[in-house]
Structure formats: structure tokens, C-alpha cells
Length: 179
Image (cartoon, rainbow, N blue to C red):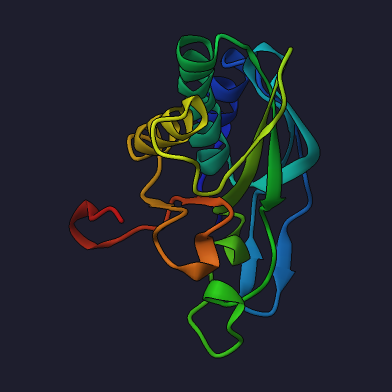
């Protein structure tokens, strides 16, 4: 029986997240019993492609984005308008390796953030940026803040597979370990 996520959905509504329930996902070993389609986060932050996530992961994303907005205003002096996503639910192994352990994407428990869109300035892709630039300061700041909301935070500098995006997930680990 899937866990009751009623309280989580109530919190999403209070956070201003636009979402709709989807049918359960069962694709071999890849499963998400209560997936949601997320289309917009608080303050009109858009997800143009939408995101298929568990409620817990959607809530972590929504809470993190409130901190991303603060960093955008503080460092860039421009408001965040959207996230460019590379993937949410997809049935695959870690790092796209068919022989690897299933990725958290296979459980709608992960999101890949490729870039950030703003009002009044160019988008910022997730990649290594010139040291000391506003873009580097912004990306370093939001990556650090992600660690407070997600159990796994990977990005440029982690390995070649994560050089162009932030991988954020809610994987359960022993002793509440975070990566």
C-alpha cells in the first residue's frame, strides 16, 4: 500500500505549487505509486516541461526554489521565473548505465536542473562558470542551499555525468547519510 501523502499535498498547495495527481507508474522495477505532475512552483516559477515527481520530492523542490529566489534577488538582482529541467521520472539505471542500480529517477524521486530563467536577464545554465562571476556565485549558493532540502546533490565537479546539471534526489540512506 502506498503511503498516504495527503498532508504533503496540502503543504504543496500552501506553498503555491500547481500540480495534478497522475496514475500510478509501474514499468518493470520502476515504480511511483502516487506520482504528481508539477507545472508551477511558488511565485509563478514555471516548469515549462512539467515534472513528474513524488510529493516528497516536489515539496523539497518547492522549498528549495524559495531559497533560489532569494539568491537570485541578492546576487543577480533579477527575479527567478523558471527552471529548465532535464529529467524527472525515467526508468533507467544510475548515470544511464543499464547494468547499474536503478536511479532515483526510476521512482519519480529525482530532478535534474539544467538551468535557471529570470526576468530581465539571460538564463543561466548549470555548468562551471568563471571564478568570481555573479553566475558562479549564484550557482554555488543555490547548490549549497539544495543540501538542506535534498539527500543527494550532484553537479559540476562531481563527475563528467553531472557537469551540466544539478541532480537532486530524496534517496533514503542508512543513518540519514547525505551525498
